[in-house]
Image 1: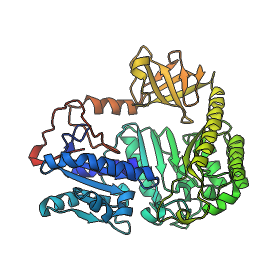
Image 2: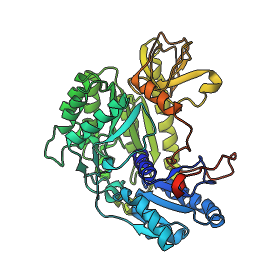
Image 3: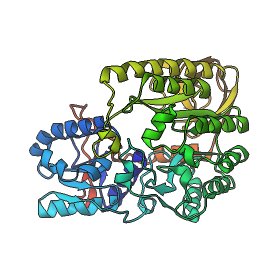
Image 4: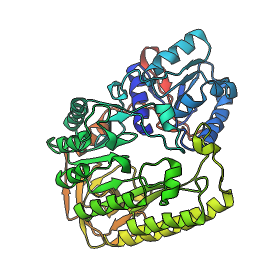
Length: 482
């Protein structure tokens, strides 16, 4: 969701006349940080990078630094106190004000801190500079109505607000017309979609409606909540051809006692029951999850319950986290904070178990024939290994031998899996078929366009001494932006 927010910031700035700087902070007139507040290391990274930018800004009169996102919503005046060289601080609800705030800071020559307490405009109505011509994010809602004791997001993003189904589908249809083959529906609690409209089956209806859009080949969604994961959603997934056999279902803990302390409104039996129903409807579905280790009060017995669920669910992948105390959340004040060394030891055991299961589940894919959507930037070693990479329908990463004919990101290839590792699959023989697509055409058209300065960076910029790059020359007095 933060990546998609960054795409919107890029779109806003480009519409306002900014052009892309090189992929560093050396030549940029504007550097924008889009922040997250879920974990403590986000704070550390932000202030560390701001510190490194201070001398660069001092040496370049007119350079501007903006900080937005959840950390900005949370820290507000703290950012300008700790880093007084920051020019703009804006929150999660007023992303659309970024160009105005930059201009105001430039004219008034003082920091602009503007944090809206409620959503001013649904973010998807803002201009977007999408990073991929073949896959796109589509927000169906913002905010969250849950009150998990470890999570600060609802306090920063606000209560859930749903988009009208017609607006969502209109955006999807527009994207497909532009060449997009795959969309991912986004929401803080995506399958609670409809609660704002009084329709408990709105999400399953939305999935089925996406299935009727001609040219849309793949539909995914993230992240659902077990509380709202109803049978009609499972049926829609199984019966809608372009909804992919993949599910990311956060567990957080396998202990019902800890789940209660987390204020998660399900228990171990309910969670495993959902997994059983999904597997019955879609036997080949790849299921992934999120797990927190070391929540306050977690005992060894509680942790063993988590390991039990991991063994039973046999996740294809798990995003595992050591509990991070976030000021402002109820969990931060709870008794029984687990010592760091205990959390680390449990974390290592969990990772080792999940690694073993991921590898075992991936080995079951060997010999299967799958159609892979060729992706850009998925395989870091592709140039060295002379391979290409992409995603199977179940979202597993597949590296495959380059075919003799040209293949573009966005095209589809049919390959046979010959080898499995814990985090990827390998097809060592060339593809048996290559299907050129409109998405590949869109990628080719974008990359065949006259060279232009590269766009706004998503995430944190590299701060250091990169190789020299030619400075962008914006027309009409515009600024380059990183």
